[in-house]
Structure formats: C-alpha cells, structure tokens
Image (tube, rainbow, N blue to C red; front, side, top):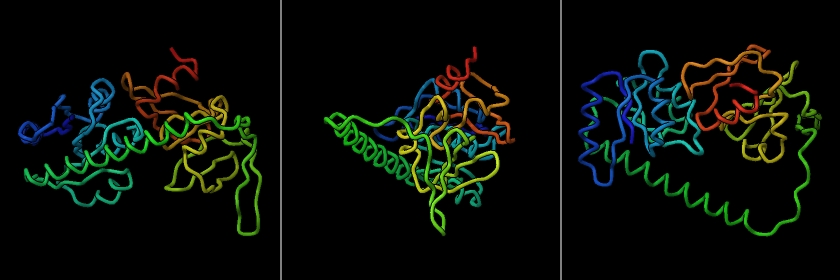
Length: 249
C-alpha cells in the first residue's frame, strides 16, 4: 500500500493508521504526484491512498495515468469534497475527507480488498474461457460501422487518429469529425491492429504516426501530443510498449 500526500503530518497519520490494520503492508510514502507515479511503477502496490491537491501533478492526474486494469485500486484522501464526482468517474474505490477517522479508513481498505478479489475472480474466468478451443479468429478490422439516427456510417481504421473511452462508449476521432461507438476498450483492442492504433492507456488508443511530440517528465511519466493538438496520458504499464512502438530510446 502506498500513501501519497504533500503534507507530512497527514501522510504520517495515514501511515500510522495503516500499520495498525491487519494484513496491510505499507510500501512507502510519496510527497507529490510525479513521485507517486514512479513509486506505483516500481513498488506495484495493490492500493494507493491519494491526496488531490499537491504540487505539480494532482491526485486526479495521477489516477488518470494509472492503468486501472493492471494498476492499484485508488482511495482519495482530501480536504475538498467538490472533487468527488470526478474521482468516482475515475473508478475510485472510496473518497475520504480529512481529518480521516481510523474506522472510516479501515472500511475503505476493506472495500478495496473486496473489489480486488472480484476483479481477480473475473480475470480467472476470462483466462479459463480464453484457454478453451475456439474457432480461428479473423484478421483485424479494416473499418468500423458506426450507428447513426438515420442508419450507419463506415469509418475506415486508417482514418482514425485516436480513440478515447467514455463509459460504455468510445469516441472515435478522425481528422475531420468525432464519432461515438458503443464499444469497450477491451473489445476494440481485440478488433484493431496495434500497428495502426496503439493502446497507450486503458482508456485510449493513438495512431503512432499521428504523434507529433512525446513529453517525458520521469522514467514512467509520458504524455503524447498528437497532430490535432490533443494531449494523451500514457498509462504506467503501457510506457514500455509505447516506447518500443514509437522507436524511442
């Protein structure tokens, strides 16, 4: 478990509380968002207690950079209630307001454990299903048919610059227009050729040749700037594959 807070007294209080909870191992404390991303990549904690307002990268920005499929669960710990809607849109397990009570912290940890157990069970079901013999898969899609009120429109994959998740939908961005497709990122990862549309985050795909600039502010902190002016966060667990795909040193 990792604690992230720029206030030393608050971080120390959370650390002491965690040490009293059964089955909890504290792997470290980070004082800002960039350090948090580095610690998450190196220590791979199951749970992060994350402050929101910090110098540099905010807690919300850290949560957006975390690969929610392979990364840790997140519990926000903050003095500001107004960020709760955005926090839960980022799939936070819980949202604790300072000063944090020990019993409330313990409940948040229990919630995180329950969700992790459920995710592990679901992943096992998916692995078992994948291991069963199935018909040979067809090649990657060359086009996507997108439903409109008056019918369907065909969008060729080679026209797509980037894709971003929007709950149960995907926003398909081309050079001239954005379309809305009812599909998950997992479904699209199976349908799209990674050489044409590279998955860079659990919530985003980017066309490699649409990347105009790569921003690095740490070993595992990466942001892609595309030709259309978008800035796309690269998930911590995707940094290596993005680096290799773009031919970066």
